[in-house]
Image (cartoon, rainbow, N blue to C red; front, side, top):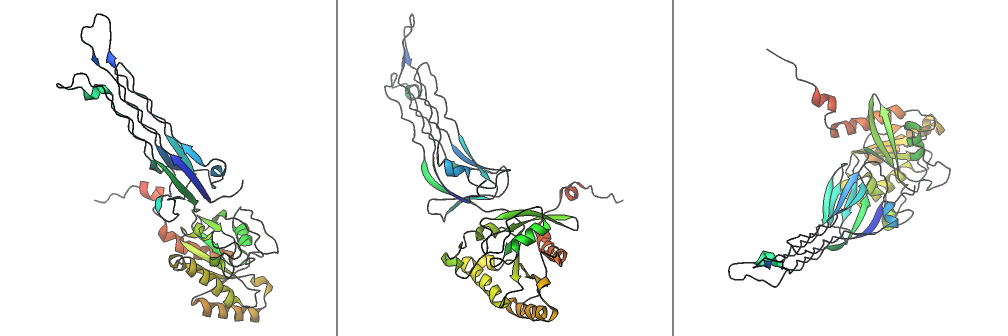
Length: 345
């Protein structure tokens, strides 16, 4: 399945049905009178977050969603049928933006959340509605209200607990494949990862989700390489895992490149908790490793862990550091909520 995280959609709610102008004309009924029914209301357009979807590819092949209009009113005081609603089923984590791509209409972060995007028009009143003591035979009815037509953008932001950052070939996909059942593409050339990947990771009896996004390069905020279009997928993460290639000639410069791109994209993203890891240490001798680690610690201004995704050394310590940052963001478990309080006299 092709990954798609941005889609433009055209929606229109149904218009209301027109009211009816009608009069009773029945045999042996001496006095008739108005009996025109009201028009039915138009259908609404909703968006609903559902489980089981992780891409917006369905909206690549269908961009127009029009709800049905209400049926016109009829004689014998019959109200027209209402139009059927339309529900856009989107993956959990989808942001709905207005046409300007800046105004957020809704952010569907939980399965089952629904939001009304366009309300259907009300049906018009039939002439029966206008009957009064001074107007016994009204000969007019209201038309139905038109539906609402608008253009919206759907932007998917994957929901994960931890996000992987780094230059191309920093070992992000190798790390994800080593700690989870995810099988991202791994090769010895840059930009092997072309779309985000998710993996479920377990450590010390705890599980959390890790997102791997395509690598960033200097100038990504200006559109170089694959750009920073995928950084939105780690905005919801509780912690960022910054992997730095230990075999690079300038590990401090590589780290600064990523930090600069984060700050250019969003200051809030740059302030998220980060775990910095020097990767590929199995290819370094002790002296080179010590120098690279010291240079990296001086650049990021904090502790640096060492790891080798291929040899799987230091992986557990990295996962434990991630869980330390993730655990405070988790709510109480179902067992903790349902556990009865101990009785005390």
